[in-house]
Image 1 (cartoon, rainbow, N blue to C red):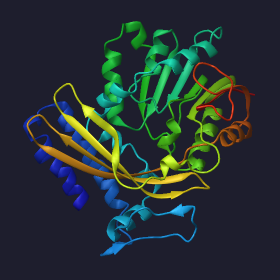
Image 2 (cartoon, rainbow, N blue to C red):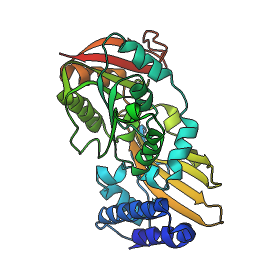
Image 3 (spheres, rainbow, N blue to C red):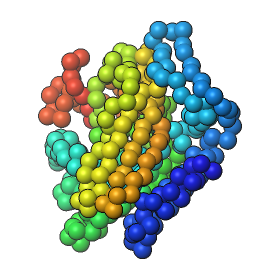
Length: 344
């Protein structure tokens, strides 16, 4: 009920002055739907008081105690509640802030270099977001399909696509679906898992499932591009810090709406490179109304060895392994691990 009340607060406080706008109605629908799902994940194990969990393993630590109701909610969340698109659907403004921060194009240049000479391809991009990668590829003549769970990100992508020439528009399709649980379309020449998209998934099992799905939808001889930050061994110390710190999404939007966010590490497992985060986002609208949201995420930074084993297990031959988006060879000191692999 509390989570549903939070959704109603979005209507009453955040959007009441703009209720006639399509964006406001869509935002309320997203919030109410996701609040209902969160409620369903929190029905069991609720109690009162303050609870804290501490591990005897020095490599596995809970940073901060939390109310037992929140702890129980977190412990009982299924994957779909733990890592869903809620961060991106807090408000449609998040997609605008995403575009303000994600302005690089060196990965697009690398992808275009790798597929040079292959002709016009049919390309699938799971976690396509606002279309940063897929739109330039469509403008280059490829047919592209974007797959994403975040309605707010896809809405902004659609707005960009509508400003393209008709020929480019006809080459782009967007599908709103859960990348892990949903069905992927088939018969592609290239699947792109770029931009650290594996951070959107909470476990190595889910990440490998994406590699397996890519193999199943690619034509024989098709390619996969996988691009991640490089982290080997245990969880990097930068992921283990305590206390609240500024985080994404944070910024000022064109209509004067400001968004501020903070992140707190509440649990981590060094050997398995896992971390859970509590995230807070405050949205302040031009009329002075403020809406605040709390949500949780778990992340698993992948290792090079993991991705290599997944690719080989699911029928890929690795043709290139780069250490950055300039195409330099991979080494232990590389900032990234970028795979270009062909399906047998």
